[in-house]
Image (tube, rainbow, N blue to C red; front, side, top):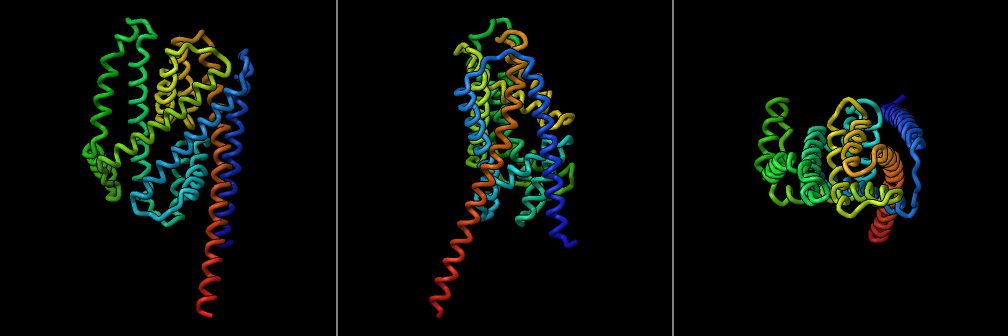
Length: 325
C-alpha cells in the first residue's frame, strides 16, 4: 500500500472515530435534556442555529487571516474546510487530536509545522483575551441586574482583568510571550511579529465570534424561556467565559461538563434552579449540530471552489492552445 492510500485509510478511520464520539455526546445530551420540561419556540431555535453558523464562519476567518499574515496564497474555501474538519478532532478524548488534525491537514498544503503551531498559539491567545474582555464588559453593563453586594465582591477582579486585557493587546506583550515560548520549548519557529493593526483586528474578530456564539445561546434561551432585558448581555459574556474555561480544562474533550457546569452556575444567578442546567445542555447539543452542519457547509463551499478552479484552468489551457496553434 502506497503512502497516499495509507493517508486516505487513516483519514477515513479518524472520521469514523470522530463521528462515533460526536454521536455519543449528542445522545448523552439528549438523554439529559429529555428530563427537563421545556416548551420550545422553533423560530427562535432556528435563529439561534444561524447565529452559531456565523460564529464558525468568523472563527475560520481568523485562521485565514493568520495564514495571510504569512503571505500564503490560500483560498478561504479550502482553509475553511480544512480547519472545520481538523477541529472535529476535539470530540475525541484527549485535547491533542484537534491540534494533530489541524497540523496534518495544513501541513499537507505546504505550510510548515512550526508556523501552524505558532498560529495556533496566536489564535488561542486572542480567543482567551477577547472572551475575558467580553465577560468583564458585559458583567459591568449588567451590574444593575444583580444585588449590589454580589456585584461589589467582583468589581476589583473584573477591573484588574480589563486592565490586563487592554495591556495584552500591545504587540510587545505578545512578543514577550513568543520569546518565553521559545526559551521553554527551545523552538526558534515559535516567533511571530505582531503589529497594532494585526492585534486589534484579531481581537475584534474573535470578539465578534464570541458575541455571535453568545447570541446563539441567547436565542436558544428565548426559544423556551422569557428573559428580562437586563440579563441579555450577561448571557453573552457568560457563554464566552464558560467556554474558554472549559476548553482550558484538559481533563475533558472540548470542555464537556466543565463548560456546562460554569454556564449553569452563571445562568442560575437569575434563573430558577435546574433551568440553567437545561439551557447549558441544550446549548451543547445545539453546538454539536451547528458544528456538524457547518462542516458540510464548508465542504460544499470547498467543492464549488475546486470545481471553479478546474473550470478556470481548463479555459486557460484552451485559450493557450488556441493562441499557440
